[in-house]
Amino acid sequence: MSAGSVRDPATPAAGTPSPAGTGAAGTSPASSTSGLRTPSLPPWGVPAVVAGIAVLTGLLVLATPLGGRTATVVVFALLLVVVQTALSLAVEGRRRATDRLVTTSVVLAFLLALLPLFSVLEYTATRGIHRFDVDFFYRSQRSIGARDPGGGAYHALLGTVEQVGIATLIAVPFGLLVAVYVVEYGRGRLAATIRFFVDVMTGIPSIVAGLFVLSFWILGLRMGFSGFAAALALTVLMLPIIVRSAEEMLRLVPSSLREASLALGVPRWKTILRIVLPTALPGIVTGVMLAVSRVMGETAPVLLTAFGAASIVRDPFRGGPQSSLPLFIYQQAGDAQQTAVDRAWTAALTLILLVMLLNLLARLVTRRSTIGR
Amino acid sequence: MGKRIESIGLDAYYGTFKAIEGVTLTIEPKSVTALIGPSGCGKSTFLRSINRMHEVVPGARVEGKLLLDDEDVYGPGVDATTVRRTIGMVFQRPNPFPTMSIYDNVVAGLKLNGVKKKADLDAACERSLKGANLWNEVKDRLGKPGAGLSGGQQQRLCIARAIAVEPQVLLMDEPCSALDPISTLAIEDLMTELKDRFTIVIVTHNMQQAARVSDRTGFFTIEATGQPGRLVEIDDTQKIFTNPGEKRTEDYITGRFG
Image (cartoon, rainbow over all chains, first blue to last red; front, side):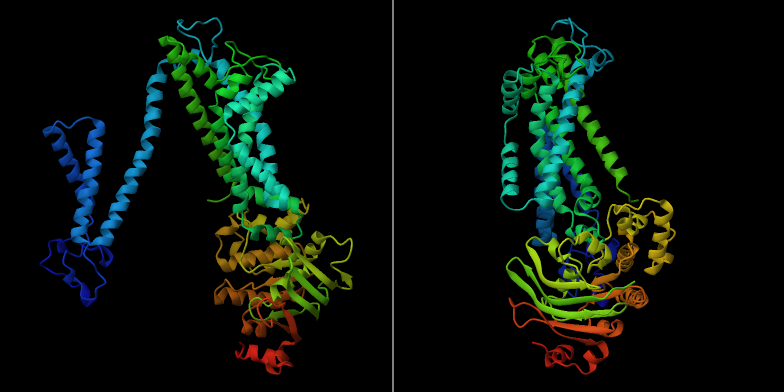
């Protein structure tokens, strides 16, 4: 240790060990002659402040008419920010105080952002658990009225899987081809035009996509309501999301990799297929999952194109009207009967779980496809 | 193996900007030729023109003749892909394919060009890694990702990848500028070994390196920014560094440039 780090016995914090020469050096600026060490809160300072504020908040809640979960949390957060910043300002100076203020604010903002997510999950789970039984995943709503207990969403689950599955099968290849064209081949006006229209497509309200399929496919070509018609409407919604995300991911692939492959005498198309796409794969899969999750919850376009049905319809092409989970939720929640509302909550929970499961699967698949340990 | 390269009045453009003008030179087979010169003088552009990598950049084009053993690389009906298979390239920054293992990186060129037999690939992998002086360091972890190697090892992996497709010529664009002295030494030694089998052209900013490894040295320069780069002279390395024919070369080599 240098002469500058001689401990000043007058400072109370000097008794604690100071890690790597910074840490708890004491509160007096005079403790450092070289000027490199500045006074700072001891390592136990932050936990101590948090604990102190927690106790203080508890006392406040008990002693004053303040109360309730929300008020307690708000008081705790405010006190923490104010007291910690003031303490740090007094001991450590402005720069460290600002640092602590911003760090604490960021953590609090993060927790605040998580709040809606967890409350939605909790709310749906507690209400959806009543009908989360075998019957629900085994039976349809055939000859079951709003007041009747029982019934299930098998037909709706099947419809969602079929419609979103078909939409994904159409949208992913098309979307990837468009993105590859725009990034790898597109020059000049055509690529710019495509990019513009993809942007326009992103802004299409979902009901308009449904109306388009309704007027063009169902009324115009007289194809009738079907799961496939719903899949077409969902494709319209998925396509721009997939193109946009895949485009971004392909642009992130360093051009040095393309050059390395081309310099080996590998043709352009094979370079894209075997080098560029695999490198961008995890990002592309994330984009696809985003699109899948988005359209899985769409109600309006499905209502206009698949129309909804109470019984199990397996054939999405010629089976006629079909149901889907969001549509099922919409219809059941509209009935002013507790049995129907319970079914709607369980369907909502099922939808959330389905999306989470798909995301998890996608993560696993992409992790396995890229080497690395 | 190892072919002669002859460039006759070669101009290269980026869009309307002329990057190099009237480069005429001959590169002897089975030798190391170094190209030196200040930044922006077009030596890298010339190197990339040799295996038609220049035209990968949108709007870039080349005029003039570039003969590979009397066959014009830019002649009608010549496929750039075939040219690149004959003339390999190593880049300034090591660029192994991040999704591939060491093994897959080395045989990538063969695999992507249709070689399927496991035995052939295994043999090529071992031969190339030995050729690049990397075999002993990686032979026990061929299945691990290529991106996990150190910078110098990655660059030798890229050299192994380039020589695995058995090219006639190996172009190296500042292959050591991102490496430490020990890795640089390893790659310089490697060049001396490889010139028995390949024609090697290396672009370098390091004049000691040019003096150490090359048989012949070419000096490029530009008059001013915005002007095209030109070849000033090309001669035996010994002569360029001791008794250059041009004043500008001497100024550059002795550090009295600009």
